[in-house]
Image 1 (tube, helix red, strand yellow):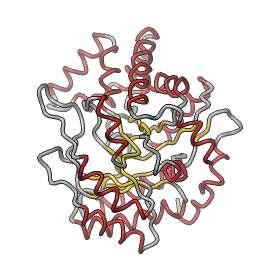
Image 2 (cartoon, one colour):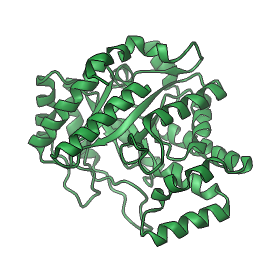
Image 3 (cartoon, one colour):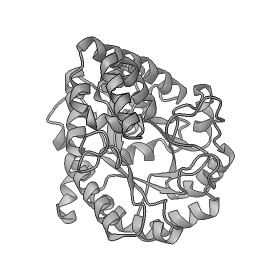
Length: 354
């Protein structure tokens, strides 16, 4: 799709996707602008396996919370990533559940980690193709992650891709400092400020900045220390706040929930939760199916998450009792996250502010 034609997806036209249904798919740009100074964190869920979605929606309705649904490039690119879901398929899945449940709380659909891992044309063009596909599918927010590159290249690549999202008027998340766990180098205030200033000077207006602050992706090993440097996080937030930017926190699965209130005190306004939902789904899959997935994982020396696409048809068609068990635990877990994120009542807050 030509980027110039994306104007039809500007915020004032997003409602055309809703067809008069009660659900409220919103552009994330005004959402995060509205809560930048509220000490709340909105949960964004990487629903790699679809059966967790109704539980998350039920929890959001019960707690009056805004939630997001997202997939990273690795999880759901134009070829389906390792979950077997293209942007169009993921969007339609979310909307299918929203209609089925009469979901009436504001939510957004986000393209998480549109990664550009090097400076090759191949990487850039794949990211550009994915962004266009996500916007055309109906996503209302997109993250560009060129943090694997040195800062000058990260800035250049992010600018080039972000203009597409700016032209569409949708929410924008950017990243500086690769998420590499506590052994990785933390994002400095200076590089965050240099990055955001360069984007703003080029007409790019991100809502969210993801940084390296000690988190990691995936499960924490037993006994592994969970460490997020909130002092550095706050320093970065205070530096970029004048530009209308707050912090997105990646890698929350495994972090004690009783610490989440501290995140909200330090400028974090979006919290990504992904592996948690996968763990719940795996727990309640039929035993024989999960054993086949584990066997495939061992034979191919792969992470269990990469069995999702291979066994997608079988996972999607599990017995109803298994679907119900997944949804119920996802519901209980989502409620805990929402409460820990201080996100209860954010749906009403957003309605009032917007």
